[in-house]
Image (cartoon, rainbow, N blue to C red; front, side, top):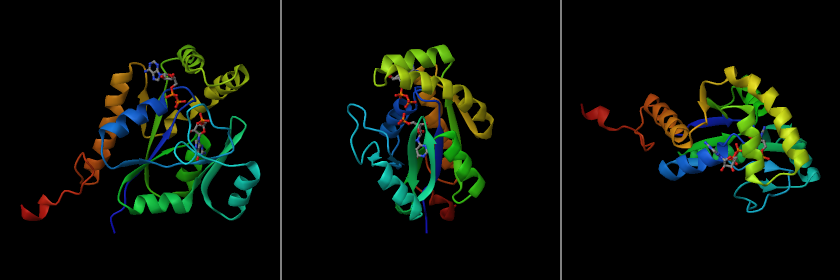
Length: 204
Ligand code: ADP
Ligand code: 5GP
């Protein structure tokens, strides 16, 4: 059975991962986003079931005890996790799935080798620019911004554990690079840039 390819994306908060993902997913067919569960409160504009499944800590812990999560981690004081059955069902439809997870979650998946994946790390050009972006986004409290900046220094140390590095300095260039990586991985799996299998081989 053909299943989609898994892409793991990590980045310090504010690096621009969501912005890049939205643009590349609008461009390339056959790419889906894995919707994580989190105990974090929704930001303005975020929708339950679209950006995250927003759950209470009790609900999250109950799911954890039932073994629902393929991986989970505490990030910036909240719990985040990937539902194993939901991810497997998504991959089984044949689409490529993007996991937006932190460096701890990526490490868990790397060690378990449960599902083969391509891994990408997105960095801002500098910590000063990261701070500017977190403040410019205007969605987080001062306390949250300071915590995310502090954690960014630690998260950046994991960069060499990832196969691909994308520096999100000029947005259009970073979008081109992310799109190129997805297309290259599809090519490696003998698929067209659109994600469809190459069937012409049998006719050569
Ligand atoms: P993340 O999902 O990594 O936390 P976002 O995509 O929310 O980050 O981006 C954080 C802020 O930085 C947003 O306001 C976004 O518009 C802005 N941003 C993203 N990429 C760039 C870029 N290359 N140059 C300038 N600002 C950017
Ligand atoms: P945010 O609160 O900004 O949406 O996300 C904070 C961090 O949590 C980001 O680094 C993001 O990648 C990470 N994250 C989101 N979903 C998951 C998940 O399911 N598992 C793990 N381990 N991290 C996640």
